[in-house]
Image 1 (tube, rainbow over the protein chains, first blue to last red):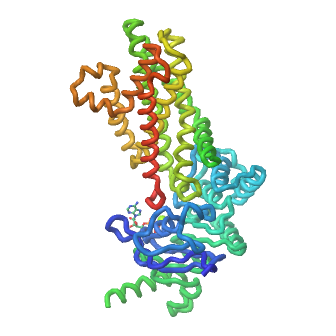
Image 2: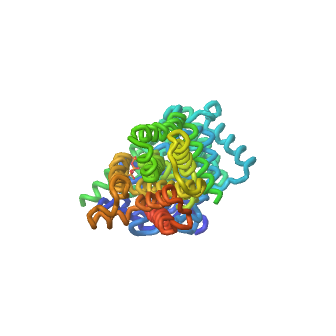
Image 3: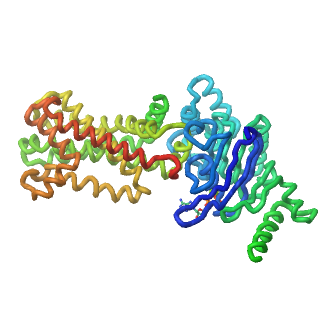
Length: 248
Length: 243
Ligand SMILES: Nc1ncnc2c1ncn2[C@@H]1O[C@H](COP(=O)(O)OP(=O)(O)OP(=O)(O)O)[C@@H](O)[C@H]1O
Ligand SMILES: [Mg+2]
């Protein structure tokens, strides 16, 4: 039980009458990267917002390291929303510094050092004193990631972190994510690209609020029964499988 | 406390880094008060209407500034980020209040000192006490702005709220017509609107030379309104209800 970073049981969530999360149960072990994969509207963002405590479940339960999401354990969480959510007049550095402070990094010297470190990590050193309005889309995305990781949270929720990044930087991010998990952090990453999915240790395919399949990328590929199947094939395989069983 | 001040400092830095908005914050009160001052047919009329005009302008400017700024927190998505962070609702609301109060106070002082130095309006009563009371109106204005924008879903709704919240208060606060000559039901409405008490208190001080201790009722009502609005804004910022 304490080895699970997250365990979800029979979780459902409705927006009015729309069932957006439909009876999801899953466990995510500590120190792993977990990918949420699914088309637009599958419920990835909603699931992440439930996990961060921004939304309350309609039914079912969530526990993060043994406790339900609450302000008390919010500082152990890093959250990168899908839209780069930053203070547009402030500089890159001011934004990151602000989030570092509200996540409890009060000691100045240490904080400044860490802020500089993450700026270099997301390769925005040359732009550190420029306001957010003057950044390109991908740069905003990187600044947003920096704000989420500055306090070195053991549990990180990244909602489509690689959207709009060039291939080189994307590879670079994945190297960094791997370093985080090997240092013991747990990452929950949503995406709709199969390229991202391949990097995750474990994947959940989501569709219409349900998890239609779960496993490691190689397990999911193998279950199609075809030796040369890629993750895209695997996703479609499970979508069809769901339709067939639904029609029975 | 630390988080609250961090948020206050951030809101201030944000405005300081936006020179055009900052210039407007400083210039608009000057333009409006010159217009009012020089359009008055006589000095007596200026003297007698000034307290009500000041109270109204402080409410209007403070409401506008804090309301729009707080709304941007939602539209740019940072409110969602704040709500997922360890900061409490009190930190967010009071942090904002402190940040915006600084600018509202600057606007209040510009309005007041322009009236008495440049327009040479006369008043009785203690200068610092009058300023303290105006700052109280400023606090109320900021709370009102934060409250309305915590409830408004977007900028457009917020803009619609401005006439709805501000105009009725101007009409029934006694600025244009004496409250006791209004129909009974409007007198009742007037009794429930905070600007009425702002106007009443400022008039008592500036026209009759009363001190803060004489206008306890006005201070009490304005303070209660400010606290009440903050509590209501806090309800709309509950975790688990989206952002
Ligand atoms: N605030 C809201 N009010 C009502 N319905 C919503 C709201 N937010 C999302 N939904 C609905 O919930 C469903 C899931 O949305 P969600 O944002 O979780 O999808 P997603 O998997 O993150 O998609 P994407 O890949 O486009 O980001 C959609 O049908 C959407 O219309
Ligand atoms: Mg999404």
